[in-house]
Image (tube, rainbow, N blue to C red; front, side, top):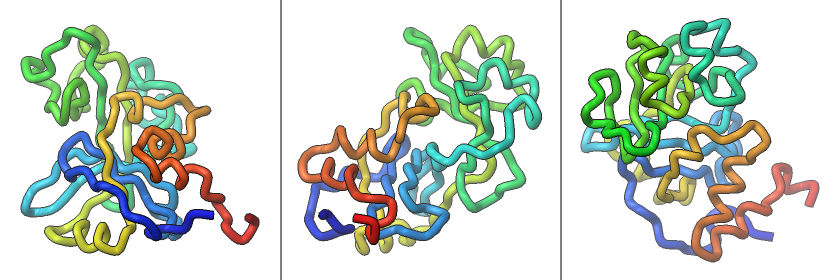
Length: 197
């Protein structure tokens, strides 16, 4: 059995577009098995959204104009414990689209962009392959994330656009770990309740 933080691995750099993968050491309800997509990271801190926490709220009940463009499952996701009364939207641009030239998009990394929810979703349907809407976000003040990483709470890895728009049948935490260099794939088999092992 593998336990959290018992072996070393090469950490990637925290940057927009990276993933923060909760190690097995994080067992609290907020971040246990969470995968956070980093949107901003600078000297003032880090901001991201948890991409694998689906809520029971349907997009068509909260932001009906965006329901058609929302990736399946068309639910609002719980982006994190901060600012849960506000919505934040990330989208993935279609192949060949220059995100930097789209006024209603703010490029995060590659084809992934923050989407202006005041924009017309019908117009953006020509540009985006799908969006994910989040209630709230995860945030760390300057130095806070680094402290948590030093405690082996997070594994940093490159993110893919498919991590954002994963199908409901995909266990994103497990899939992301499985594609990392050895020995990180061992974490993917770690039981949700270690006492059951």
